Image 1 (cartoon, rainbow, N blue to C red):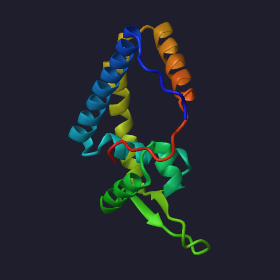
Image 2: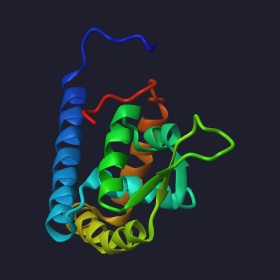
Image 3: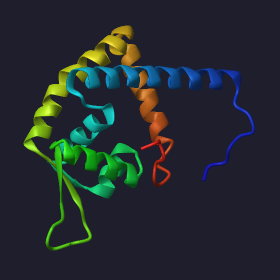
Length: 159
């Protein structure tokens, strides 16, 4: 575990608060628009996207890691989404301990319908407010920040 400093500087705290505020507001916009237009939450959309990026199916533990949520949070999401018909859970006969989440055709259609909403929100509430070099600099800074903070095991983010 990294050594924690006794006190952050005022500049560091200001940057942290700005990052947290911007991320919270952007999340709220995406979540609100997805819910209003498709009845889909941001995290449900992220499950669909993670499954799609993995070729349509993932084991539950890697899905939780990809989403940066706890395994129990991933299980609760997939259970709800399975009831909605967006994913199915399967257990291969060769490994009864493994559970896979698989994207259904309905889930794939929903993911396709969600993409223009995500694009519009990202553009309207984020990208339209930064010039090209600022976007690239922001991306570079945030990638560097994420790379400097590897995962800490199971994520506890309320899911």
